[in-house]
Every structure is written in C-alpha cells, then in structure tokens.
Image (cartoon, rainbow over all chains, first blue to last red):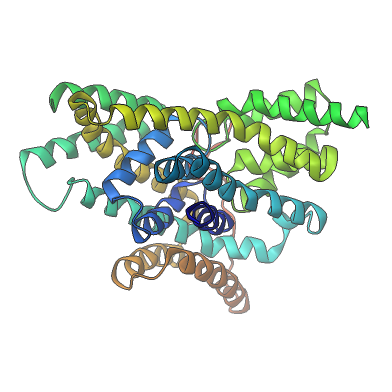
Length: 179
Length: 208
C-alpha cells in the first residue's frame, strides 16, 4: 500500500514537473510533510544528497524519499513514478504533436508558466531559509549560517563554482566550525 | 529480431554511459548525446537532435530523461524509448541509493551533523541561484514580474497547492498573450537565452 502511495504521489508530481526540478521542491516538500514521511529539515538533507548526486534533482529526491520511507522497493516505486510521465508524454508528443515547441499557444503558456516557476522556487527558498534557522531569530548561529549562505551564492553566481562542489566545500567548513 | 534486440541493448548501453554525467539537470549531456548519437552511431541527424532538445525542454520532466527517451523512441519505437530511459535512469538511481544508505548510516555522527548544518545554508543558496537563473528568462516585463511575486504571495498567504498554481500559470499565459495581442501590444513570448547551454554545462533551473 505504501509502495503504491509512493508511486502515485511521484507520478502526479512527474506530470507537472516543469522547470528543471528546482520548482518541484515545494511540491515534493508539501507532499512528504502532509503524508508524515519527513520534516522540512530532513527534506533539506534530501535536497543536499540529491544535489551531490548526478542526475536530475527532482528524480534524485524522489528516489531518496522513497528509500527513506520503504527501503529499496520504496526507492524503485518513487523513482519510476517520477520518470514514467516522461515516457508517456514523450510517446504522445512524438506520435501526435511533433512541432509542439513551435506552437503559438505553447509559447503563450510559457509566458505565464516561467514566472510562476520563478515564484515557486522563490517560495521554496524562503521556506527553507526559515525552517533551517537562517532567518527568523537573531543569534550568532543564524548569522554564521547567513554568511555561509552568502558565500555559497557568491560562488555560484559570480565564481561559477559547480553546485556539487559548493555543497562539499560547505560541508567541510561546517564540520570544522560547528563541531 | 536479433538485430532489434542488439539495437535496444546498444541504446541502453549508450545512455547508461551518459547517465552519470548529468549533474544538476541535464544540459551537460547535450553535447555528449550529440557526439554519441549523431557523430558516432549516426542514428539521427543533427537537425533532429536539436528538435528533440527543444521538445525535451518544454514538456514536464528532466531534460536528461526526456531527451534520452525521445531519441530512443525515434530510433526504435516504444521499446527503444524504454531501453533508453532505463539506461539513463539506472546509474543515477544506484548512485542515489548508495548515497542514501551511507547518509542514513552516518548522519548521527557529530562531524557529519555539523557539516550538514552548513550544507543546509548552502542548499538555500542553491535554490536562490536556480530561481535567479530561471528568473532571468522568465521575468521579461511588468506583467511577468507581477505574476512571479503574486504567485509567491499566494503560496504564502492562501496556501494554494503549487500544482494548482502551475496550471493557473499556463492559463494566465495564454489569456494574457491573447489579450495583449488584441490590445495591440507586442509580446515577446520567448526571450533569447542569456547564454548557450554548452557554456554553462551544469546549468540548472532553466529547464523550461
């Protein structure tokens, strides 16, 4: 039953998974919290592991959530749920609407969809900042987290450091200063 | 029959090799797919592969998975699509499972716990970065700016389900573009991408 629930949850998410994965973070988070599978902080660690692994971030998160909920079979159920929509959509589109990307309505839809995706990602960022103590209360601890946040963002945008490397460097720094 | 099985296995194997390279969304594999499928194997033409990537970007799902499945389908139908999908999925699946096992084993170690306190702050930065990257192509005028911040406010205060908001965005886009055209405004529905995917090979967030 839990396997079917995992499969079904990620199948539905897979069908709306626009925007390269990061936009799906709040969607997946909402589902895993409502279902009582994990807390937001635990889910942040899922994103960390997903970001360190190769492969799409949304699919990786699904696999990790599945594994944590029900071991290897859970991982398979969640992972397949996430990729089967791709398979179905590709087959449908390849058969019927080959020129979909040139379709006028599709372009118009993206005019509205892209800013929504940006809003979703912004929402996820604020929510994660709050549940991981970056903002909300002032203490030296949260100030140090904000500095790490700023350094990471600077490395990503200005120095163009690979995201996986940012995660690893941040981990080394954290192990040095917080233990 | 034998020939077909061989082709399916070749598809599976080709995408199995490409799979682990797809860090962070899939743009990294575009040049790799081109080299393997167009130059080496000569399964599809250059124009075809460009079309495949354009479509892979605009449907839900990860670009890496969509484009592999699409190429598999073009080459060998539904079974080809499945072979390519399994090929690109399997290595990353195994890597994530191994990392999950390791993480669950060591997460209570004080050093690891300390490391993850800092990592969580970096993950917030990573999400902001993804939003910034996609925002550059998404927020192109006042309307899109309002939609973007409006959707954020709705998520916070009205607690609507994100999926509902995604569908709202699709409808809003079609309605607004038609309305603007009727009123005689010019609508530049698609802004040029700031840089080519090859330049930013781990480019994330811009998957639509």
